[in-house]
Length: 104
Image (spheres, rainbow, N blue to C red):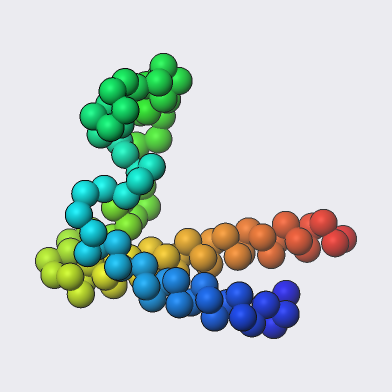
């Protein structure tokens, strides 16, 4: 599976390396607003979102970083890259498992 998609993996690797560019932008990323920020952006909070907002309060890597590893841009960038790597490994692993299940 992985050898057949060499160009995809190279592009994905480039995106992982470039992911800290988001740290240079001001404000928040589009669509990644909390309930309070969403109310500021659109003027209201949808009822379903307000009801489900506190359903999941734990994040493995909150704000795409490593706790205590955000003193400088380099440290924050490393946190972004590590977060992206973990996400790619998790998604690729799950997809690999699903593809083996479907094939068998």
